[in-house]
Length: 319
Image (cartoon, rainbow, N blue to C red; front, side):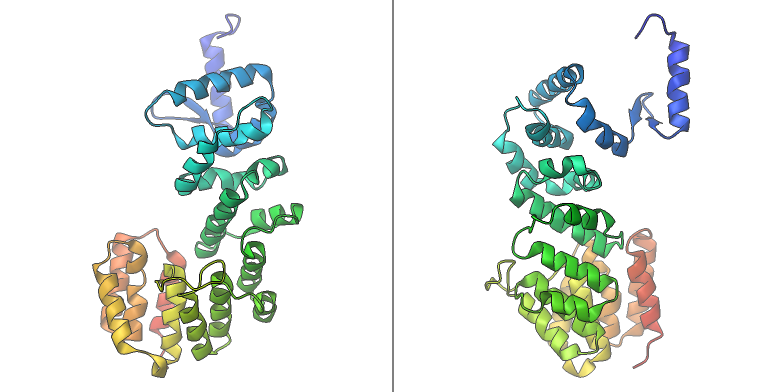
C-alpha cells in the first residue's frame, strides 16, 4: 500500500468502483473485478513488464499445486501469443481439450475482442471444439449469435473442421426463420451437423417423413461424413425428432418410443427428463405429460424455460 494514501482512502476508492460495477466485493472481504473487465484489460497489461512479472510469479506458484484452476491453463494458452518469450506448453492444449466445458465461459467472452483472435485460433482443433460448444449453447438457450458472427466476419479465413463454419452460419440463418436459405446453404454437405439442420428444416416445412429420415441418418453419420456406430442425438435434436410424431402419428414406431421412454425415466440426466412431457404427448397420455411438466417446474424451475413454454402450447394442440 502507498504510505501516502490511507486505508480509508483506499476503501473509498474501492467502494466507488463497486458502485460503478467495475469491482465486486466478496463474502470473504476481498475485492475482485468482473470477468469482462479482466478480459478487456489482459492484453494491455500482460505486455507490461511489471504486470508480466506478477502474473508469471502467480503462474509458477500455481504450477506447484496439485490442482490448478482453469484460469491457469487459459493464461498459459494466451501467453503463447501475447508474451513472446513464453514457451508454449503442449500439455496446456491437451488439458483444455479434456476440460473445455470449464473454460467455455471465459473463451466465449473473448470472442467479442479482436485482440484475442489470433490467440484463440492458435490450436484449430481446440478452437473448433470450443466454437461447437459456444454455438450449441447459444442455440439451445436462445442467447443469440452476435459474437460468433462478428468473429467469423473478422476472420473469413477460419473454416473450422468438417464444414463447421458453413453449418453454423446455416443454423443461424435457420434460427432467423429463413428455412429455404438455410437448407440451400448445406444442401450438398452430408455430415452429421448438416443432416440435423436439414431434418429441422423439413420438420418446420411439414415434411415429417423426410425430417425423420434425416434424423435417423444423422444417428449413424459422424462429423467427417463417414458412418459411425449408431447412437442417440443430443437432447435438443431428440426433442425435434420426437416432435415429428405429434403431427405424423402414423409414422411412429411405438416399441421404439416405449424403449426410449424407459431409458429417459431411469436416467439421472436432466436433459432426458425434459423430454418426458413430449414423449408422453406422443404416446397420447396427456395426464402423464402434465405430471412430467409439473415435475420439471418443481425440480428444475430455472431450466429450459422456452421448452416448457412450448409444452404448454402443445398441450392445447389436438390433431
